[in-house]
Image (cartoon, rainbow, N blue to C red; front, top):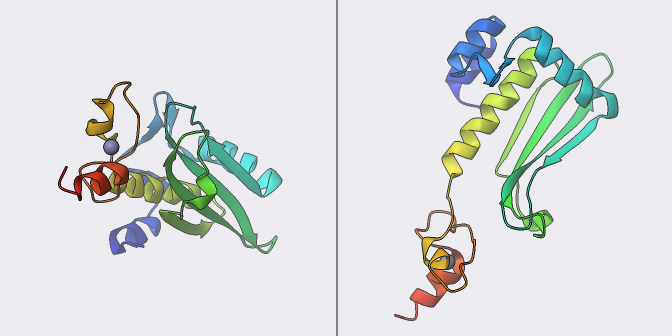
Length: 159
Ligand SMILES: [Zn+2]
């Protein structure tokens, strides 16, 4: 965990939200204790919650919350997986980020801060070479590459 985030977590929720760079989680969804408690309760109810809003043509990241620890001191574990299509085998992907936090409103907010930072850091977009093909393909750029892994392999034969 970055030192700045650790410091932020020791502060009141409002300060933590400001340090995290947002007072609203999304349009009309304030990062206030009430809203966070509603979402936290939803996650705690089953102890496991997955979100993957991908379609066959639009890749999106997958989020998995798990609740570990004891009843008295439950902890949240958020795993973030890289964007995949709904038809992809996301299981093959390694988690790009794991955040372990107390199962509290502050902890949930810290999970969001961690997840946002990780996704921002790995934002790769789609391979433009593939997009220019006929018919165009939607492939994610390879990690750290300007094109997808397929295009990088192909180009490596000096083509
Ligand atoms: Zn490509």
